[in-house]
Image (cartoon, rainbow, N blue to C red; front, top):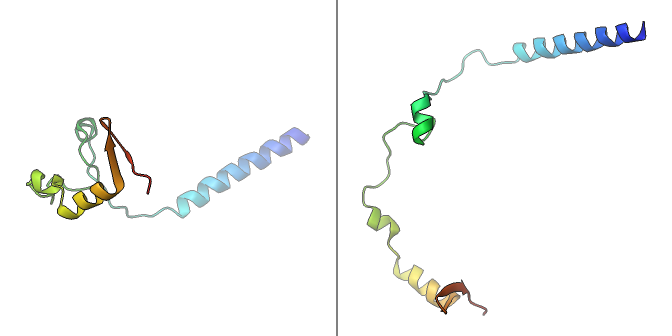
Length: 87
């Protein structure tokens, strides 16, 4: 008899959890256009395919004068390795 009561309790708790989960779910969700081809090609998910990124990759990757000063001050370039300078 004890096992029957336990199974009834477990069933009721499961049903209540399911009912409360469904009752608290949002009715309207913003759908994101995600297809297999976007996942397989590595495209960004949840954003438009048109990227606002700059076309000039050299300008993005260019090292500024401030960056060069920082590297000269804080980075030691010895024996072909770059390691943090100990100052």
